[in-house]
Length: 124
Image 1 (cartoon, rainbow, N blue to C red):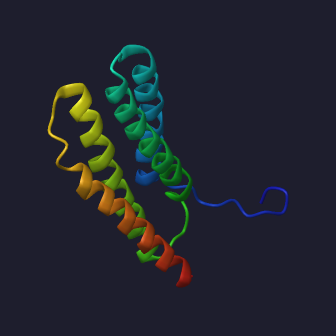
Image 2: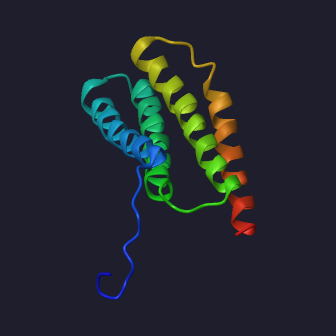
């Protein structure tokens, strides 16, 4: 017992791990967009991908280790899938010439993940 508070058992969090990696990748992607890409449209697309990756990465890093109900945890995994599909597709399109056909599915998964998270908040 430390300062009258019980020590919590800390366990690894895959979601927090992925979130932190997404946030780090987003910072690097944004820096590359600002300093390594000359085309304004490509810059804008990379900044959009970076913004989504950073925001959702931060959410996963913070909420990943939290004690959530099953619906809440499912929502976080849907958010992870969505950001990988959306930001990955957009960044892959700019950097590697990949088709961006997965971006809409990623966006829908992000919306769905947030709706699931909202519903899970009502069930706490």
